[in-house]
Amino acid sequence: MTKYEEVFENNRKWCEENTRRDPDFFKRLKDHQNPDFLFIGCADSRVPANQIMGLSPGDVFVHRNVANLVVSTDINAQSVIEYAVGHLDVKHIVVCGHYGCGGVAAAMQPADLGLLNGWLREIRDVYRLHQTELDAIEGKDERYRRLIELNVQEQCVNIIKTAVVQKTYVRTGHPTVHGWVYDIGNGLLRDLDIPFAKILEKIQEIYRLEGE
Image (tube, rainbow, N blue to C red; front, side):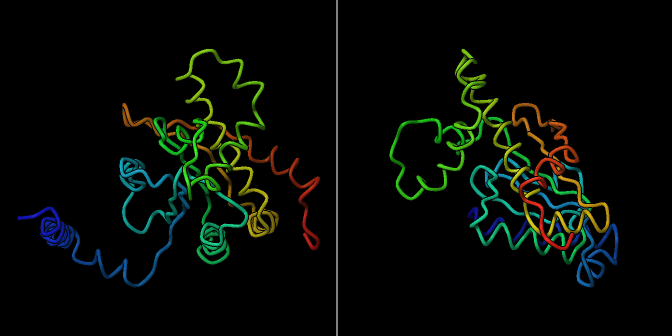
């Protein structure tokens, strides 16, 4: 059996196992989804959202890209946020980076990476914003880990800037935006304790929207 064929065999077994445990499992999924979480993570194959959170299908709305970026001109990411907040009414938005991120590592290199240049420039902008702190870190590995954390923080800020998040939070008191880092080496999630309310208040001094 090839790897490709194995996927379908695994899928069949997964369906049978879930149906055996819960005959209504797929019926509930078919009828609706009601996730509390929007998870914005890296496309890295080692970071499966549901599994690392210990949650089931239907519990997490997921968007992934290289280095878990939230760019204002990325209609894909912005549409996901709009739908998750405006239609699914998620209570939490999580940006989850991970130590050992290849996208962040690539952004630290002075190299022409072709089509990736524009995307990785977003991470280089994070470095520029925090250059004093990062340049003061002597160890390359420690600096790399810190940039991963700061990248998560800045993507959280980018989410808080969005109209749908600001308006919905003022009206309902949610969603709250969180920043996490996943450690591939031990499987543990780390909460960066992003001060959401404080950032929102500061953001609104400049990004406040009319009609709030």
